[in-house]
Amino acid sequence: MLKLSRKYLAWWAVGIGTAFLIVQVICDLWLPNITSDIINNGVAKSNISYIWNSGYKMLAISLLGMIAAAVNVYFAATQSQRMGSKIREDLFKKVSFLSNHEFEHFGDASLITRTTNDVIQIQNVMVMILRMMLQSPIMLIGAGIMAYNKQPALTAVFLVAIPVLVFFVGIIMYFAVPLFQGMQKKVCVKFS
Image (cartoon, rainbow, N blue to C red; front, side, top):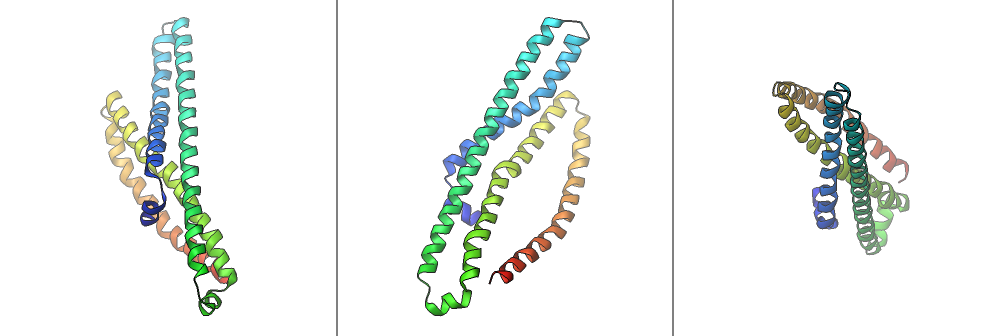
C-alpha cells in the first residue's frame, strides 16, 4: 500500500488534508474545555453573559471543526479516487499488452474483478487511512496532552488503557484479516 501511495498520491494534497484534520481534532478536543468553563464560571456563578459568550465560542469552534472535517474529507476522497483512477489506467495499459494466451489464462471475469473490486478496495482503504488512521493518533496525542494539563494523574489511565486497547485490536485483526482474505479469494474464484 505504501508503494502504491508513493506512486499515485499527490503529497501536497495529503498534507493539506492532514493539516485540516489536525484543526478538526483540536476543535473536537477544545469543546469539552469550554463546557467545563461554562459550568465552573457560568452556571456555578450564575453569570448568564459568560454562558452566552462561551456558547457563541462553542458554535464558532464547532463550525470551524465542521469546515475542517469537510475539507479533510474532500482531500481524502479526491486523493483516493485519483489513486484508483491511476491504478485502473495502469492496469488497462498492462492488460492491453497481454498476449492471447495470457489473456485466456486470467480470463475476462478475473480481469474485470481486478480492475473494479480490487481497486475499489484499495480506494476504500486509502480513504480510511487518510481519515481514521491519521485521526486516531492525532486525537490520542492531543487527548493525552490535555489530560496531563488538566490532571497529571489521568496520564496513568492512558498508559494503562493504550496497551490494553492495542492488545484487543491486535486480536481482532488476527482473526479479521484471514476472514477478509478468504472472502477476497472467494470473490476472485467466483468471477474467474
